[in-house]
Image 1 (cartoon, rainbow, N blue to C red):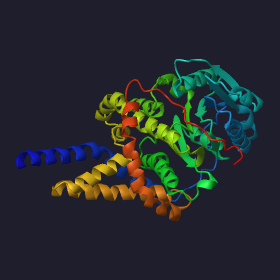
Image 2 (image 1 turned 120 degrees about the vertical axis):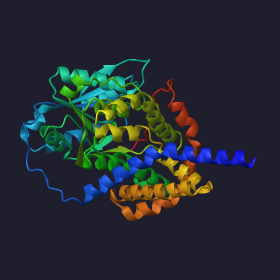
Image 3 (image 1 turned 180 degrees about the vertical axis):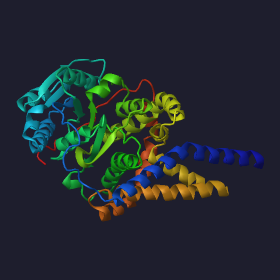
Length: 410
C-alpha cells in the first residue's frame, strides 16, 4: 500500500513539474527581457528611417458597441490629428465592421465619420469574420497597413505616429502596449486591481520582454498592426475564440516577427465582475489551450529549423494559465520530494520576478503591491473557472460578447 502511495505521489509531482515547466521557463525569459528593456537608455527615434505609409487603415470590429463606440472613434481621430505630418490626416481611413449588430452601432459610426461595413452572418458571432471583412476592404482601398482596435478602447495621442514610425523602419507587424482601465469608483477594490496587474503582465511584460530578447512580441487582439503584404502572404485564416494567438503562431511559424511599440498604448475597459468577467477570462484562457493543440506541431517544426521566436512562442502557447501554475507550485511544496520542492522554490522565485515586473510597469506600484493581498482570493476564483476554461478549450466553443457598462461619461 505504501509503495502504491509513493508512486502516486511521485507521478503527481512529475506531472506538476511537466505541465508547469513551459510556463515558468517562458516567464523567466520575458521577465528578464522586460527588466533588460527597462534598464536600457531609451533613445527616441528622430524621424522615420524609411518611406512613410501613404494610406493606413484602421479596422474596428464591433458587435452591439453603441455605448462606447463614439468615444473610441473620437480618440482615434485625435491621434490622427496629432500625427507629425499634416498629410497623415488625409491618409488614415477608419473602417467600422458592424457584425450582427441590432443596436445603433452603425449609425453612430457613420455620424463619427467612419466607413461602415455591414456584416450579417448569424452563424458566426466571432471577431475573426469581422476582421477578414475589414482587412479585405482596406486592402482593396489601397491601405498599405491595417491597425486593429477594439470598439471599447481609448488610444494614446501618439499611436498613429508611433505606428507609422515602426512600419517605416521595416516592421511587417507590430503590437503596442495594451492596458485595462478601472473605473474611479473601484479604486479601492484590490481584486480588480489584481486583475489589471495580471492583464499588464500578459500584454505588456510579455510583449516588451520578448522584443528585448529578439523574439516576436506577440499579438494581443487590440492595438496591433499588419502590413498588407503580410496579410497577402499569410492570410488571416484564424477562426478560434483566441484568434490573435492563433494568427501570431502562424506568423512566427512562417518566419515573421511582430515588433513592439513601447511608447504608445491602447486602453480598454475592464470587464465588470460577475458573469462578464468570468466569460472574458474563460474565453482568453480556454482559447489559448485550444490553440496549443493546433499550433504546437507547426511551431515545433519551425523551432527545429533554428527559429528562436518559434521556441518562445511554443513555450507560450503550451503554458498553463499563471494562476494554475501557482497552484502547481503549492502541490510541489506539499509532496514529500526534495526535487519537487526545489522546483517549487525556483518557480516561486520566477513568479515573484514576473509579478514585480508587472507591478513596476504600471503607474502606481505601491498600491499594486498592496493588491497582492487579494492573491489567495484570486487563485480560488481561478480554480472555480476551470470547468468554464475546459469548455472554452473544446472544438464547439463559440465566441461570447463581453457585457459593457455605460462609461462614456468618463
